[in-house]
Image (tube, rainbow, N blue to C red; front, side, top):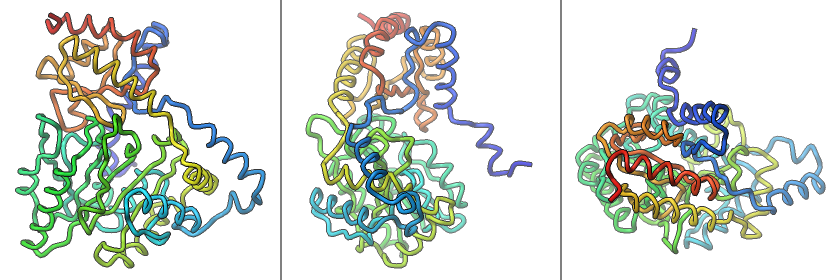
Length: 399
């Protein structure tokens, strides 16, 4: 009954979700306070109170038929204009509302872009480690995923291999910074080199390539680290953004796509993307939450980053003290830890015996590592540290 495309997706259901369900099973046996689930990137910081205020004010002040009705497939014009002005103020861009397309989160935004640009057999390049759903999105539009092997020295993209793997069929390159699963922010130098390679290869091959920047974690950067805005580096760059993490509203599914005027044939691309937003089944982004976003931008509302930074400092400091190796994340809320044994799935099973749940790096095309999502309570991290120390001792890491 089910399609050939769906069968492998069913058989290889997300390891992250499987671990999350395992966490619930263990919690029922041992008690939630004795299970340390670091599997799912679900924000634990509450949405700012302004989100609730904006919801209630909008419902009170606007007509029901307006708040809950249809609008342009691209979203409310005033919301898009507010986003454009905010981006212009922050990054020195020159966007207007026509460059902004409201989407049902960043995942929907990426699907809109891929639906708009891909022909069957077109190649999309990703850099390992990468968010596994990218492959599913590309497959949905009959594209081919090309994976660049990881640069485990610092988890900046492996640009030497990237230059070698671009072909005349390469249509898009997806980057994600701050990165899931490493928390690494791609540097100015990295983006400059990456854009230079894309320009050179475009000229050599006589093709067009789109740089797609997936940015759900853009606002989650610590210690004054700058997250470069990619449209400043490459003319054919588009951005997919989500408010799931910056406002702690992942269940509301709200985001946007930026298509700058500098993109080749931008007017046609914008028009096609707006139609793609409809035909993939989204029709338009959620109406009420669009108005909430406008209010939050105007009042400069974001989540409390101090909570995530405090969590990062605790878990990174403790694990490195116990002898684990990991890159200190500059953003997002993930820690990518080197497994003490080659088969990181074996390590995950050992950790599970201590009621610690982590995700194997092979789920991100980077075996030999595991991902911890530290978007949990500070108290959970504190409670988990004796378990992590016992795991380290079991592998002879503690001195």
